[in-house]
Length: 302
Image 1 (cartoon, rainbow, N blue to C red):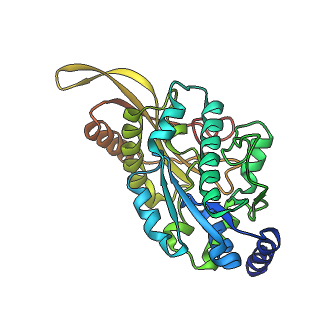
Image 2: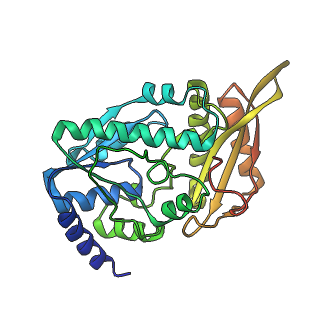
Image 3: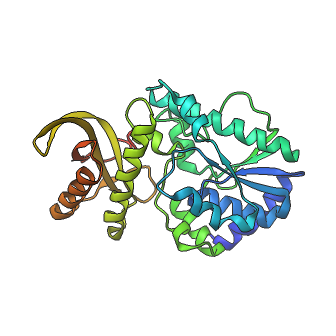
């Protein structure tokens, strides 16, 4: 792929497709960041990037994203309570994804009404479409979209690209390394790293555990490394029996997320991560390492 030709063509196509004002959902990941940058170059002040703080993001992430993209006129919409309420009592992974997808859209619609925008721009990439259309899982921005929307147009400039190609575009656009090389993060966020119902307590646990895993494994350049809550189990802390969370560690290598191999992390590293998680998060009883490649597993747990 000729990167500069792609950039020029994408900017031209955005200008052709968007006649008025538009909203872009900006998560801070490489896909939406590239999309927002292309859209801004194409449309200038006619594009409004909207970052929805769902409460499902990484530790300290929302403030950082707001700072990185304030020059693009980023609008931050705080919706932590709204997402938690919408997910209350929901355990099925597909239902979670659809609820999250619809909640995002309704918020984007609210913001679009404020500026009379009728177009939504999304950072959907090719693997999102393949997994959603193939019935593997509904990505919140594809299969998770509601059937009824106020937007007249949805524009997806990256819909034929794989993740490694998007990173090439990000570098060519001059985006910061922390964006261009950023580890993939699921659109539904920590909700799909919690087996079962999403609660405030579980979110706090998995957010800290995820930060520990990313910090410890980042130097090994994983495609993705994260923590997930997969249930509860009996443990012992001090002289007391505890019934606490089981946290699973997952670290994989991949080229395009269509397949993935488990990383062979050294034993001392795994022991250190386990020790940190169980000592820094008192409600965690045990830590396990997921050895499943993709396929048969998916990269995320839900």
